[in-house]
Length: 518
Image (cartoon, rainbow, N blue to C red; front, side, top):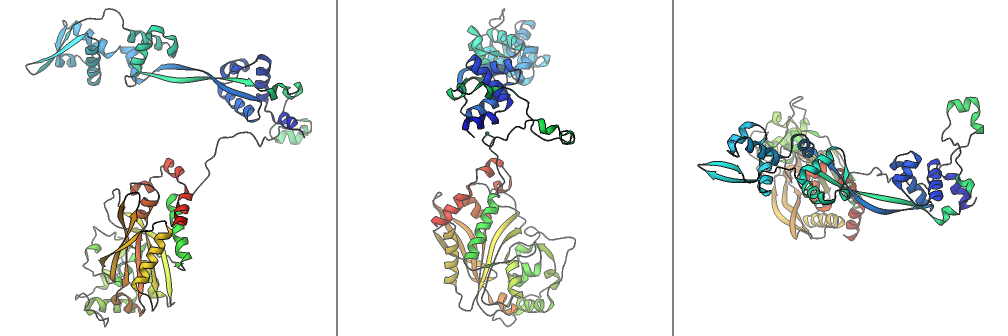
């Protein structure tokens, strides 16, 4: 089938009507085409777009006009009069002079209108304002007997929209009113002309003949068999359509999957744990004392119903001995009477270390390399860098030859694969690791170091009650802090506000490129 034949079959009835009109009468404006065909301008614009995509018509901007309409305040002024006019009328009725309080007491102008009226009446030279004995006085200097240009413009617009180009000597007044908030709007309106192309002019007459076409089969057509005599309109797969924004992952979800893929590449296995956790796994098994400030209500969310659970009996006894006197680990413990009731309380986990310590206690596999990326909860005051619910990137590595240098290399490799090449470690303290360190990365764009997490080697007080004799390397890294750096946001709350502009602007290739360059 020829190209011309394909187009002839795929012309929409409206396209045929529009094309026939501009071929017979020559270039026409969209508004003229709409009037002659008794359709709206939007339909003509759509037909023009279809015809242009097929090379049958060209649209061009012929002229630009400025259409004026009244704003909210303008509609009020049309009915009541401009504030400056009402002000001088009030002053005239009061003998030409009055205090500000006297004018306010009339109620003719609201507070905002009075302020506006004073500004414009002074600017027009109608009044003077003075202050004596602590009172502001207004006096008429020149009373405007005739209507001003501004008032004449409002009278014209009361009848409907008008073109700025038609206002002649009133144009300066129009522009002046447009600078007053919500009084007059000036909108730019472009006039487009549709012209047939040489390709359109060469079409055979039969290509433009209007004919009845149907677009779908109905039950009536099928039952009656009339469909056999009908002409079906072909689908035009080349017709232009509005771009559709397809579904995509949330940037944070994409970042989480990227992090998970890196740890899998490094030979780690992903694990998961419950959001509601026993205080035993969240605190006690990690050698965190039961009087530690982090266990207070102002830092931790405790459940009220159910309020408690059941810690593992035998392991609880060993952990309790470690808290009391070290339990044969070489430590003195914390020197207090450990409470199983306190360890039985249910909390929203404050860190994903609760997940890794539970897995460590239950898995005999050695060597062991596991990680988790999941939500945690802390009773924090929410601000630009803190949330009450956030994510942690947690992991442990268990091996008889594991050491701190290996842990440092692992963390540096992870961040390097995220595109963050400069990593440093600062000595720190955590109740359950020794030695311990904070992890900082250098951000080139900010020219500064940013803390992203902590790491260390589990203490014997943590591992020996679990029956683990090998060194356990552990780390906990902040996901949202990393997201702020990699997703170009300045406020951590922006990650969860579902701003469509930001979500649609996210380019996942940026993270992939950063990973490759790292």
